[in-house]
Length: 217
Figure 1 (cartoon, rainbow, N blue to C red):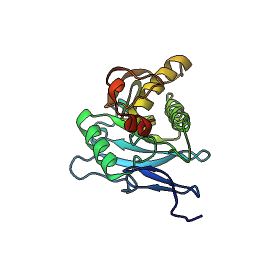
Figure 2 (cartoon, helix red, strand yellow; figure 1 turned 60 degrees about the vertical axis):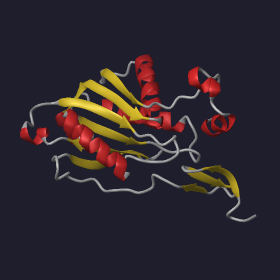
Figure 3 (tube, rainbow, N blue to C red; figure 1 turned 180 degrees about the vertical axis):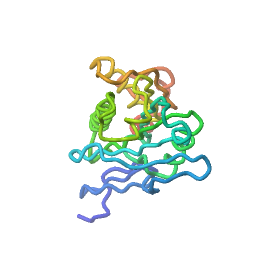
Figure 4 (tube, rainbow, N blue to C red; figure 1 turned 135 degrees about the vertical axis):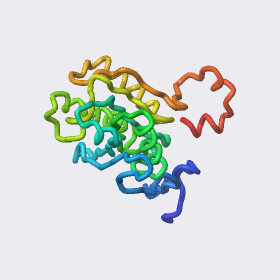
């Protein structure tokens, strides 16, 4: 069997080959954490879990340097990409969350969850929940990450995400309500062009072409 023999072609996102190899066609570029010269936002990467491998990029606005005693709302962000591409470390998401942190004056945790098809759902949900519990472990100021201990107000937490990330935000908000996790008070969620797809079509899905339905499912 040729290594180039396709099993599934989900261009422009991924290709899956019959030997099990996954080729990502987008969302693989990465940029390091930094101090953004335009707005003074600082960022750094943290490991949340070794097994499974879950990490995050944390963002701290310049105002925490100017007023270090003031705690700010915390945004937990889940990136999009159809559950199969992108990461918090991509140029687009790094730039976007940087700007969001500066404009909204919040601390942010941008979650790096495992991707399909190597890690099919519910892996992304499971990883995101682990990340939220890790954030909650800082509620008394004694967590492993000093930026969260010092600067994040866990009584003012927002979930946000785009596309698949909005789907994750929705599901994490539901889970948080059911689990009643101690240490985190969810104030609101922001769903940016959310990606939802149920077993039964609704609304505009009723007239969606069959080829598109098959691709999205």
